[in-house]
Image (cartoon, rainbow, N blue to C red):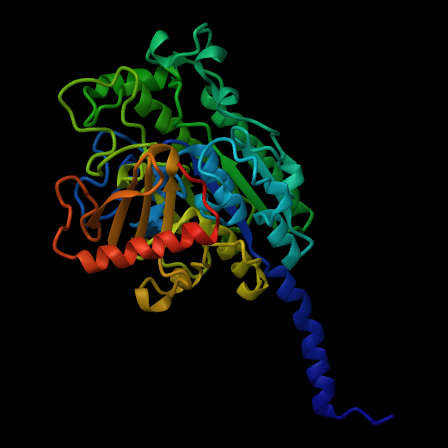
Length: 457
């Protein structure tokens, strides 16, 4: 048996010392997902180049705090313009064209596919995962079946307050008051935040890396808020868009929950090793109960709203905070919620080629270090969106977006091409003199829909 040299002895000692430090560096991940919160519905610019990409009436100091600490993605997208398909897409890293564009998707059972918790645990079995708040309607699989260690269960809109749960017999928003008062736990924002903080605390004390998804019920209807916050916003006067003082008050309550999560991460001493992503499940609603008057639409300056594939339905706040990310920085490269599985897998130490072919998203981790387009190449070259029930599909490629409209027979009826960078407004800005670009983008979109066997109209 050879006698060890001094060099080999020192090398062995260094390796033995470095192994625990590698495991200690496994990052924590906190995903905050809000509901029906539009791109411009916060008190800081989502894109500082665009004056109307914020509200002068709303108050969201903790979202401003996130922006100061992290990177804004000015072209951040939800995978779908509707809550449940977005939640499936985020969970499994898939376009909605693959995993289902509506509430029900009987051909896609999330538990039978790779999910964010499963992917993270494949990298490091020590990961503990939790989901608190809104899970989604007709998700089929439970959070635990999808790899979560703790959750609030198969929760949906009603859990966070809907007309029938608030005493409106018909179940229709228009048949009840424009808002409801709850001075204890409006929209369950307090409870959901408490549960997340408790879970993170337990994992830090147990020396386990954590993945926590906090899925707030706000800003989904019904509008529920505290009386003191309602009084505050009523005293501020008329909102700058067609939402109401009560809706603004509900947003501040949501913002307070975000602030408590930020405070908890700092108090636990893990802020230097925790990535936090803030985004929402779809664009803002086109109307809010009681929101009237000669004011701008709730999603102004974007065209369209929730349910549509226009920018107002899918362009959303998208902010990332974490190790090595420059505070107050901006990235204009298009990203989507279905990129998060690949991204989280990468920052945990996984390799992209290890993921299944069903994963459509790309890791945007390179954009955490370098916000330029040169730092990132998306294998599929574009982002894809599909909602055949509305007869719409869309593709975002570079600075351009193509809307595809389907006729009743399931064939393409027409297309509309827009340049949405740097100006994201579509209304009145269709490009008609670049048919070659439009045709190439249409063909790329159709190829993806064919590849994933997308639902037809």
